[in-house]
Length: 178
Ligand SMILES: Cc1cc2nc3c(=O)[nH]c(=O)nc-3n(C[C@H](O)[C@H](O)[C@H](O)COP(=O)(O)O)c2cc1C
Image (cartoon, rainbow, N blue to C red; front, top):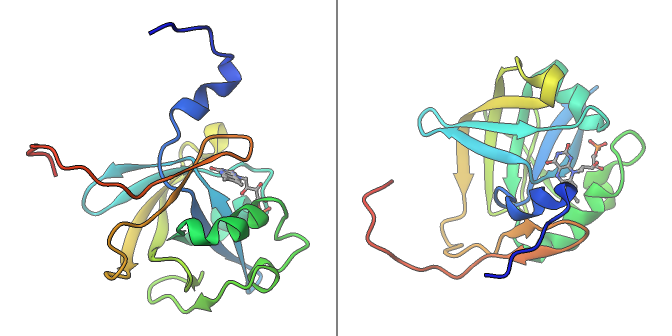
């Protein structure tokens, strides 16, 4: 392989961690949503998820204060809405109305589930020790929802600068790992 030096600012594009998700929060009784690609699993059960939310985002203060959110996983069908939600702020825009997203009542937390997403996780913030340093919130998933009819979700994976990779193809290999 003929490798060349890659600018350090582009390293994140190699290690994009997973599907772009929509993080829904509630602040002053109003729901908001932001796309998020920097997240990772840190425990199987109870499921723990670490995610990076910048303090420049309106969602940051909501998550820090209310300590609840939902993580909603869209497919490529929602790509335009997802990017639209990332190009404006809940400070000035009601994104649910602006992008035609449907809020559904969660069972364990205040922020809503997003109906158009094929999976949704109701989460509570359980560890804030890395928030001031890195904007990392550790969330515990309290309840998970999915549409079992979506067999191979065509999730979108952020590769930077408006480029996304679309998932969907599955291969099977012998592996004992869960
Ligand atoms: C594909 C994509 C992925 C993003 N990932 C993150 C992320 O992981 N963390 C973050 O803080 N912001 C991320 N953003 C930026 C926020 O979604 C964006 O700043 C948004 O407008 C914040 O909305 P808010 O001010 O209503 O909270 C991402 C944006 C896009 C389009």
